Image 1 (cartoon, rainbow, N blue to C red):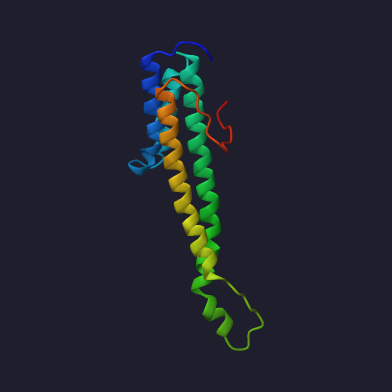
Image 2: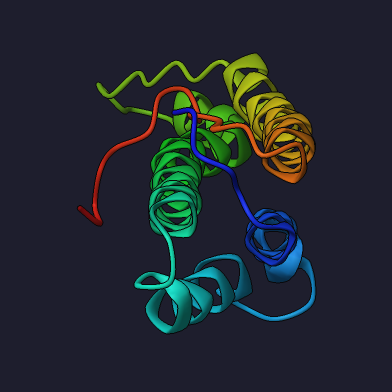
Length: 144
């Protein structure tokens, strides 16, 4: 888009991207704060409308990905605790073999997701401050 983007719009979108770190300080802050800014400023310019929508969708998608990984971690964690107890119980015909390495692999996946989120937020904030559109990868469109 070859339109001139005002400095105040760039600053608001930069701030909205950086609010993706809001969940470190306030539960659901990375979703709530950008959503509030989106609702206040979406009618002011197409640039702000598009980018604030992308920020909200990215943070909602990231939350969904984290929930899925954590739901996968719970059975592996419980299974790794009871691994020896279940298999060593006498006269049992149930043999459950949990691999505790899977639990730690999923936990490391959470760390990798956190690093990816950090890098993407910084990259998007820099792009929006330059007046460029940045599209987050692998985002589900919750807000249209």
